[in-house]
Amino acid sequence: MAAELRLMIPTKESVEPDDRQLVQTIRNGEPEAFEQLVRRKTSKVYSLCYRIIGNAEDAKDISQLVFIKLWENLDKYDAAYAFDTWLYRMVTNVAIDFMRNKQSRDNAVNSNLRLVKTVTDAEQGVVVQRKEIENVFNAVSSVLSPKQKTIFVMREMDDLPSSEIARILGCRESTVRNHLFNARKLMQQQLKKRFPEYSRLWEERT
Amino acid sequence: MITCQAFRSRLEPGSTDVEVLEHLRSCDACLDHALQIDPDNFFRAIGGGELEPPGGVDAFASDVMSQIRMRQTEGSVARRFLIAPRRLAAAAAIVFAIGLSVVVYEKANKTAPVQVAAAARPAQLATKPVVETYDSKDATIVEVPTEGKNDPQVVMIFDESLPADL
Image (cartoon, rainbow over all chains, first blue to last red; front, side, top):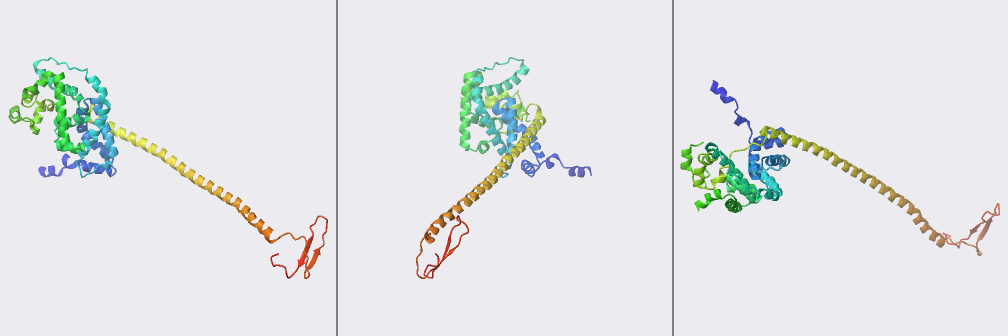
């Protein structure tokens, strides 16, 4: 009997509508459902923004802007396509615009930065190293164009396949691969120049 | 998450294995090994996982919703201002149309008598000349007596040979 009762209680998964259903609910005049959509997608949108922009506060502002644009353009969404692809396209457009406007200013600041390795005890050493990779990435990726960085982040950090990235950016898969190739090359050059201790990793392989 | 042993045995250069990537991004002990196998894991190691915005998801969602409400309010005010000029423009167009029709009407009324007068004058001159003398055998001429010196003198001529319109 208890088992039967459990089956009758709707689970979280069965109650929650999928993205397309949620969009349809909002379009049908229930704007409260938009808050549900925001909560569902916040981490995804913020993570991508943060990795592209490299600054928590700017990433938060850009994420908010993305959701406002999403609200304003929700009637343009074609349910024939995956909602996340459409959302990612919006994120990348807003983030790339932001980067283009800010890049020249940031480049001047970043070029003067040199990370100082933190000497810590054995237990903390690896943790610091991982954090340091993030700092190294933020420093060397400043030489990339906003589009190159966006593609690199989506491929290497969000694990999106090249075909999906091409769909998001509205370009060919070969273009994505070219941008990736150039991004890796530029970043390795920067590593060699600014962080030779890490560039040795690639040199040893070749 | 898979064990370190499983990770090390399954790790290959350019691996897209979800479990392998998950381990790469969370196990510090395996990081050096991962970099030796594939240096591209250097940046791949900081990916994955979803981050939360400063202040948390709830505060973020509330901020977004309040900004949207604010924009909606601004939008409705802007629309109200947008409607007012439209109404003003429509009223101005009606006033202009009425004014224009009055002007046209007045102009038409002023020009009509002028045209009639202009047409009447030559007709008067052509068909009704002033007759100062008249001489005919068959005519009967009657002079109407006047009451004062300033009164015009009226003379009636009865002649069957005269044209009808004279």
